[in-house]
Image (cartoon, rainbow, N blue to C red; front, side, top):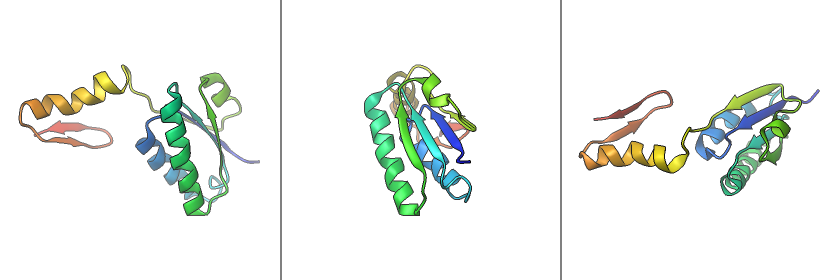
Length: 117
């Protein structure tokens, strides 16, 4: 049986690439059905292109489908990854960088923490 991985918030292209890339290193997941879901169709398509190129480069046999509906993406999923940002990119991420910059601080971002030094 082919496992299905649903990625909700796949418009976070870099995070999606890192997580799905890690999954594809496992032989059982290298042939997974990957359901990418995001509310932004442009960011979703960017992520689809990145994921497809990564799958090809790794020689994996995973298949990608894209959704704008969470329910459709989640149907039949064996694994679910949720990675979305409350408030969206502009008010949140831009602020994370602009505020430290306005105070002449250097912004360092890690997967679980953000610093301004």
